[in-house]
Length: 219
Image (cartoon, rainbow, N blue to C red; front, side):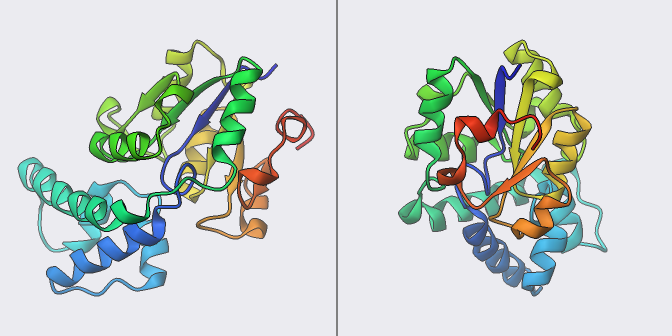
């Protein structure tokens, strides 16, 4: 029986990836590197900032202090770029209302820093729809490790069998599946066909997701 739905943030709650791509491209340029579209999918989308910065600075050992500073600089740049354009993925709010009407527990489980999580939640006025909000500092192992999804389930008091995860990236999908949950893909980063191979279901946005479709165990 479905008891909880857990959402990634970037590419699921809001289609932030185009603005993250702009921000990372500018940040790469500031450090004398070029970030192609293919590089973004391969090295940035769904990845933790530590892995991305490792790609940006392949010949340097980044200490904890340097990592925190560099990551904060990039995320501040992202928030500045995205602020005029913050919008939820179509159908999200209506879908969240459906979940609440059916007594489903909800959480956000993102690899993003808390500043980005707060920024998106407050800009879109989404806090009332979520029972728990998890960000990168609440786990020790980033996606594709399932830790953040397992922790979200624990905080919600549900089992993997009672949970559905919404994800857009291959890294996040692997984390959700490794946690034992059913995973539904959002086609903001990959195509429906690509997602269909690795998820239980795939949608373009939440206008396509009904209660009946969500609870169809054959999907």
